[in-house]
Amino acid sequence: MISRISITSRPSFHSFTRFSSSATSLDLRNCVASLQACAKQRNLKPGRQLHAFMLVSGLVNSSPICITSLVNMYSKCNPNSMSDALSVFSTSPPQSRNVFVYNALISGFFAHDSPKEVLQIYPEMRILGLVPDKFTFPCVIKAASSCKQILCMKNIHGLVFKLGLEFDSFIGSALVHSYLTFGLTEDAEEVFDELPVRDDVVLWNAMINGYSQSGKFDRAVEVFTRMTDDDVSPNRFTITGVLSALSNSESLHRGREMHGFVIRKGHDEGIAVQNALIDMYGKCKRASDALQVFEMMDEKDIFSWNSILCVYEQCGDNEGTLKLFKRMLCSQMQPDLVTVTTVLPTCAHLAALRHGKEIHAYMILSMLKNNNCDNDSYIDNAIMDMYAKCGSLDDAQMLFDTIINKDVASWNIMIKGYGMHGHGKKALHMFSRMCEKGVKPDEVTFVGVLSACSHSGLIDQGRDFLLNMLPIHGIVPRIEHYTCVIDMLGRAGQLKAAYDLLLAMPVNPNPVVWRALLAACRLHGNADLAVVAAGKVLELNPEHCGNYVMLSNVCGAGDRYEEVTEVREVMRAQDVRKVPGCSWIELNNGVHSFFTSDKTHPEGDLIYAGLNSLTAKLREHNGYRVDDALECS
Image (tube, rainbow, N blue to C red; front, top):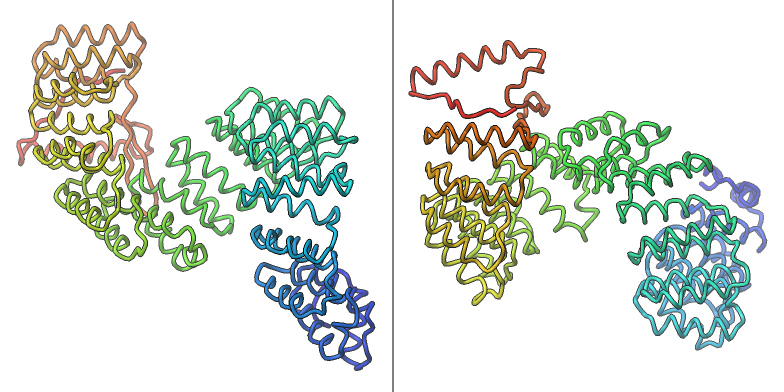
């Protein structure tokens, strides 16, 4: 019963509670006050009970204020109760449909992300001859902006002038934001400059956020500077808007300045501002600074955890991402859709299949997919990509077969997955099925197809695919496609054909394509062509240590030790150091990383003793020869 429900606005509910126990009647004033309390607390159940009582007692149609209060209560509670608001509205007597009830309905639809419904209701209001007021226009203007109805918005702006409401700060901020959304900078600035009083932070926030959302990040920062020069005190919405602009412009220097300003002005305590700081440092590739902000937070919400996870994932620290994810779980914070779609690529990069399966199981048990039907394709693709990259192709195929609306990304993941694990024929079969289903391949599709041909030695098919890309599929081959074919020819030992294609292709070679040729030369021991390829790749990318190492290995394999020495000397002169190779292994529910010649593990002596024992057995039984290739330091 209502008497047991805790609501802040107690006085208005006492009357209703007394009614429940003593059967005395509620008057109109108490009913309206109780409905307002329900709306404020978004408490739908007592609101429905009160509505039922008003129907039985005949109070509903006794006054227009009853209809307005009921519509307002249903509109405020949740998106699902908007149907109840419409039902009350549509069954109300015509004399009850005043500007107040229309405002309640309009604000409700807009608050629940239904701008189209707002633009359907607004004309009805005008047909009835009702005059919109300062509470009507902000929602209608923003709804027109959300629906890209620029002509409608300009007509509304004209009516605002006609009614003399152009100086209202909330209407002005809505117009400013909407004009900036359409990219109409001059119109937005004209509205802003004509406002007689610009000491309202809402207006400045509209300008800052509008510029930021329209991609004019420098202008957003300029407006903030003007705002502080005019002694208008920013609030947390201002700060988050400016930090968003700085994040997207990747301006670390100005971001640090803004961080200092936030601390000086005492805005660094708000969780929204701290989350924005994490995002800003992450966009600037400063994971350590982002983590420092994160660790200093007294309270962390799901956005805080997602922000720091995104930072580490974007910075390529996959091991750090998984460690943070474990911390999140230990903190009892429940992952959401953003969390899992951030961590899944990390599992894919580390080939951490067990972790990936656990995340998939969590998504099923928590029904994350079922609750996000609009994003199901994206979610399925993320899970499928994880399975494919981890080599669990049966799981990837099983999930692929269950997807009803497969997009081009779904097919690309399976083609690439089969190709990268040496199942070239299966990859080409997937491509054939894709075309049969009428799904148009894109550039990424052909990278996967050509890579599959390369890894499986399907030379003739690979050549044909490259030749048919433009005439049959309308896709101009790019450097990535030529690189795949050159790699394919190189792996097959057709070094001259690979070199000829590299010289003849219509795009300028980059370091990656020369490196593919260099790797093929190393594989087949062609030192002369390796020197040519290495010269080109070092010319284009002299800082990459791998190029020097490959050239050294080729020369060493061909007993050209003088050239090996020359390469070493060049590396020392250029101060190029070999980056140690890093590998990962998933063991005992954890992911462990280790480097070449790594001696940092506390049980390193036991590990190397075991490794030496295995190496000795390989030599003894399988004729294994240890590769004494050059190690640069």
